[in-house]
Structures are given as C-alpha cells and as structure tokens.
Image 1: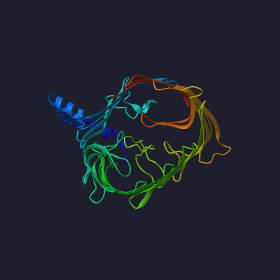
Image 2 (image 1 turned 120 degrees about the horizontal axis):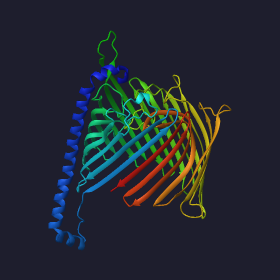
Image 3 (image 1 turned 90 degrees about the vertical axis):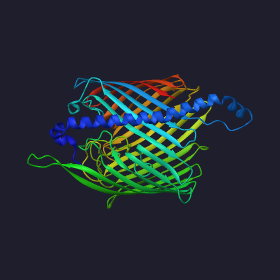
Image 4 (image 1 turned 120 degrees about the vertical axis):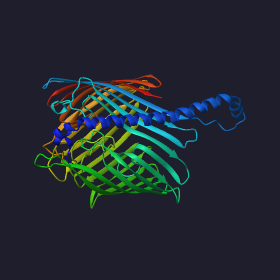
Length: 496
C-alpha cells in the first residue's frame, strides 16, 4: 500500500475537505449514539413506570412463587488516564490524556442489545509534527484531539433460525479479526450445531495512514460446526476491495487503483475432558497460503502441572498488520514472513505456607524472507521463572526470572543473560508491585508506534479499589536504552 505520508503535499491540499468529512462522520456517529441511548432509555423508563403502577401485582407474584419480573441489563466501564513522559538526549516532555469508554444494554426480552466502545486522546502539550519527536504516538493529530469509535452497534438475538442480526460498527465473528461498519447475520436453518455467517461493509483500520478516508470494502461468509461439545470447526471466505493510491510522475495528481483480495480460512478446536486442548488453523491470500499454525496445551489441576505450546508461520508479506493482531490497532508498515514458536512448562506447589511455582520455556521468532527492520525482528529467549504467592499470609508475592536472549532463534554463545523480578502485595482492595525486567525489543502497540531495543525497565505499580465500582491506579517506569525515559501514569477505572 502506498501511504499518505509519501504524498504529503497532496494530502495537505485536501486537509480541509478531509477535516469537514471527518467532522460530518463524527456528527453522524453522535446522532446514532443518541438514538441508541433513546432506544434504551425510553423503554427502560416505560418499564419502570409500569413497575410502579403494578407494584402490588409484582409483589404478589413474587410472594406466590410466580415469574420474576424481567429487567433491563446495563454495563458501563470508563477508564481515564494521564501520562507524563520525560526523556533526556533529546530533552523532551510529553503530556497525554486518554479515555476509554464501554457501554452495553440488553432489553428485558434478551432479544435487543446495544454496544458502544470509544477512545479519546488529547496531546496536551501539542505534538502535531510527530515525525520530529521521540515521543511520537499513534494518536498524534492536528488538532491534538483524537477520537475513535471502536464499536457502535445494535443487535437482535433469538433462538430461532435467525440467531443474530447486528448493524453498525463491529468486529468480525468468524475468521481473522477485523473491524468494519456494516451488517452481520448469523443463522441456523438446519440444526443448532451448525451456524452460517454473512457479513459485509466498510473496513475500519484505526491509526492507519491511508489517503482514503472511507476505508475499503469487505464481504464474507462462514460456517461453524459443532458435531460434539468438545469439537468445533470453522470455515470462512472473505473478499476485500482496497483503494490504493499510486504515485504518478510528472507532477500529476496521484491516482487510485482497486486491489481485490480473496481469503479463505479454516480452523479447528478440540478439547479432551478438562486437561487437553488443541487448535489448528490456516489462511490463504488469493492463491497462496498466508498463515498457518497450531496450539496445544495440557494441564492437571490435581498434579498442578501443565505444558503449553504454539507455532505460527506467516508465509507471505502482509500489509498494515499489528503483531498482536488486535482488530483495533495496526502497526504502520509491512509484516514480513516469519516463523514464531512458544513453549512453556510449569509446575505449582500448594502448601500451607503459600503457592509456589516454576516455569521453564522458550520463545523464538525467525524471519523467513527479507531483511530485519522495525517490527520485523529475529529473536530467541530461553527462560526460567520462579514465583511465590501468599507467602505465610494472604497477599505477599515475589517473582524472579533468568533469561538467555539472542538476536535470532538460536540461543547460543553470542547471546546475553538477563535477570528480572518483582515483589508486591495483592489482596482484594490493594495491589502494589515493584520490580525490573529486560526486553530485547519493546513495543507499546496501544500507545506508541515505536520500537526500542535492549530496554531495561524499573517499575512501581499501585492499584487501590477505593469503592466497589471505583479503582485508582498509578504506575512509574524508568526505561534505560539509547536514552533514559521516565513515565508516570495516573488512572481511574469505573465499572457499573
């Protein structure tokens, strides 16, 4: 994909038009949100009035063992954060405020629902020219206020043939995660164990640098089969039509070209009793296999022992992809083909004086094509981790980890040793922790489109549940790499 930064002059010329369009979109979003709240509030108020008018009848039904009156169900989560970052060489400061808000409602019949998730960022000190700042953030904007709606949808649920109808901004229910503005249908016309999915709309790539404000088209179909309670199979097909801006010589305006991609996905899950889990998946992109892998895990609660392993191969270069594969985030750049392997074995010991454990494992990543670049690195990590919790009394805990790192999957004599650990106290009302860790490469996908190498982090973390619905959080980090960075984060979380 040719990104908008390559055509800065042309995008600057169109900034006013794009700003007006974004303002219009967000105004429409506000109108839709208002309608959702009205759809929720009006029936709820009507139901409450009816409850008051028929209080005697309701009380009588309860007293005689009749049906309990249905109610509306709501959930609300709000998370506010202030972040201060200070660095030397270069000497910079960065002040950011952020808000994450999540709301959901289900009507008394459990058939209709509404979902809303949004994020708001404010770069207080103003940093529109993020390319010249070591504190460049994915939410930097001009003006320095960034607003995104992650989900905004209305649902219809039933136990009939039409299991689900969803309209609005949402995340795919089958296949590779993606956010889009559109419609999803889930139907079960044959048997409860067999579901069919249909979806389509405009994709949404948050933080994407793209010259097309309305994103791209997406349509898909899928099938989910559960022949047994411990077995699930999924097959899905997806079509994407992408508008890509192409450079044109001779000072002419860039032109657009439609790129059409076809993708087929297959996944299977198997579970035996409560101790064994297995997953395998594969995905194609046009006429090649783009991703394949699997995961397995076995554990015994009785013997307090377990093993987890997974492997994933990306066999072709993908475009704007975050390694976390979260549908709400995209790293700016390409993802080169790679092989990723993880293995973890653990054993716990529960005794009257506490819970003690040990983890032994390996994590490796190897590019299979292309040269290393930002967000495309080779690495290997072998580790032994010791932990202890509720030492003598409820609350105290401690961890210690010994690691062997390498700039490739082979952990050999050219690697380096590191040590990390933490200690703290964790009960229902308070959790505090101090510690240190080392990372060969460090990424903050949800905050900064930045890669840091050979990072030693010293941290202190505190969380206090001030009320049943209110938590107060504070965190300090001191990062040592090619420069020293101090980060202070203060936050509030409310759950209703």
